[in-house]
Length: 124
Image 1 (cartoon, rainbow, N blue to C red):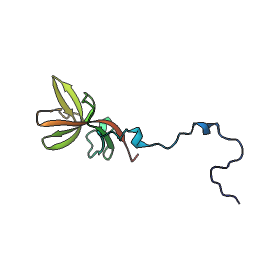
Image 2 (spheres, rainbow, N blue to C red):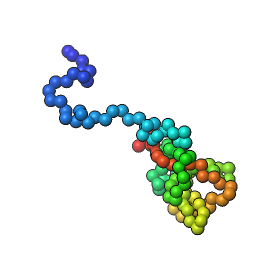
Image 3 (tube, helix red, strand yellow):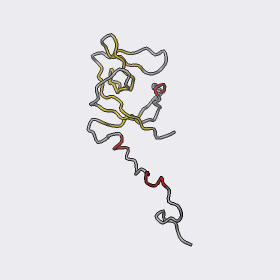
Image 4 (tube, rainbow, N blue to C red):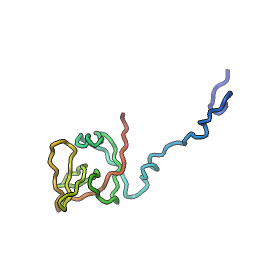
């Protein structure tokens, strides 16, 4: 009996063999080598309407400028929040993603730390 090692095959070679992709490197795909990027684990259910679930890992980029509609990490009154940004009436607002929850204005006591550029889900 001969052991199969994967390198020796008999018969017809698969035409798909020429297009097999090599190993995936998430650090490379998510550009985690940038000094401004870091992972953040989500705690809570406030952004499930955006498809962001408790336990997901968000990729935050401190160098990305804030944009209305993007998800951001914000320091507000001593709390670190992950919320959707909205810009209206000349001011930034935070939206939680929970239906009927009022938007919160970002005042002088708040700071937008980073914008989310990616999401990694470890459980399906």
